[in-house]
Image 1 (cartoon, rainbow, N blue to C red):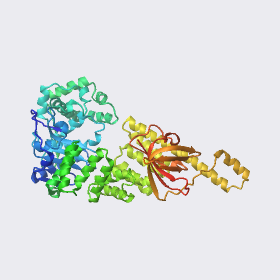
Image 2: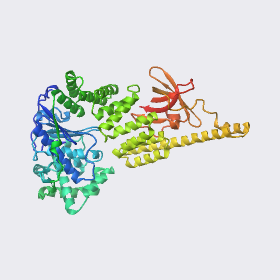
Image 3: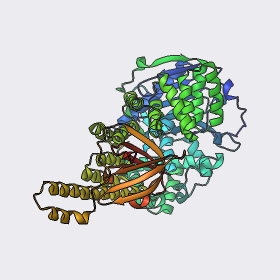
Image 4: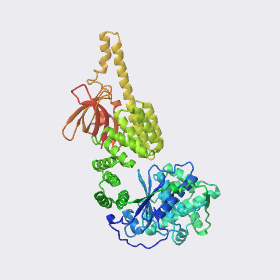
Length: 623
């Protein structure tokens, strides 16, 4: 987030009711990389968009090997006044004594929202633009990067001056320098541990010291490392990526923190500040490609409601959406936002319904298609298989860099044991788009298990263990590796059994010899092994009466909430697609010992044996 650069006393602001705030004309200006919505007019909106595009070029030039465009859309809401800004900012900052914001950045799985207040006072006119866009660039590092460094880098970049032929980076902040010279610095071992819950991140007085010191430390490191050919800030960031504690990482990268703090204090007071100059004469900014349209009042309210939903002001969002839907019952944005609100409230059926209606209204939002499909996959009968597949493919078509859609489409095919080569390709795409996501790698391994490529699945899981970010993920991956090895072993036993049975059938041995071979192995499975291509059914309930027999036969019944009992089996439980929803299993799950009494959704095909309902294809265990 971006604080106001000029510290001012707080004034309690009177908030307008959300439904009455969209009285001004709002304009949408789009480029290939950003969407700007503003009530300050087309000229100002174009200027804001131009600044974002130029800052994007700066990052592209500084980090030529990095992927600077996130897969999630970047939506900038530029409010011309504090009054309008406050109708959309998070509620935490509206209370008395909280820091006044000039900008706010929020990253979610599916969107990047940047809120700007255009009447805030800054040393640089587009400080909030540069500050919040820097947060976009480092959003992928949020899991390991401490807040002081994240904000310090944003403060460093916010003082950028962009001219026609050059860009000046790292200009010192006069206000920060003056403020730090008049106040006591935060001890570095405290600064490094500050998180989003700390008063230093919210309260006006403490927050001012925190931001100013974070800027000064970042500026000191960036400049001194460059001059002395050091790489301390890179060393620090590499340690953080390895999940080293921020204070310990600081001691290793910067040395004794008390001595280092004295160096920082001297840097602040000496006033020997330097900056960098970057030629920008060749920056390829094409302003003629910007697309502009005026929003209706209903469209503006729908856009604001979406912001309110994402910043956590659900009641305000719902109130505004009700008015939007009264005026325009077919407003696609309103349906999408209602779906998000219901999904976050864990009202899955309602969320699926709202997203489904958005899809029927020809939504061009990849998120609506994705959530409709993902929710339908976990709710049998909510949608047809064709509708689910079409929506996932639409999500990919609308945003080809959105990894979750590839992951879900792979799971969809794997659950049905259809298009398995395509499932494998989709899972590979998901991993390539987000290589640090351990869950995608685990799901890719599940596809390989369904394909009976057990060694490949184990290799994928072993690679996942190397990118696990914390002990919980390490344990989760190891559990899945153990499960894969267990399935591989069970499949090998079943294959050996089948081979021996085939050998006995073809043998010319006497009946006595055959009987002697069969005796230790029990009798053949009492239910037939069915092809998996027949009609598929799903039942949800509690697993009861689990019985296992040699070599890998599994029998049980599912008792539904309606009192119905469904008897099921599989002659080789290694072929069952096993997954968990809403929890992570502790240790290796043994179907013969652990499934009794568990809630589950089970998919099966009809069996020619009418004493049972069918042969199990997939089991999704539930909390």
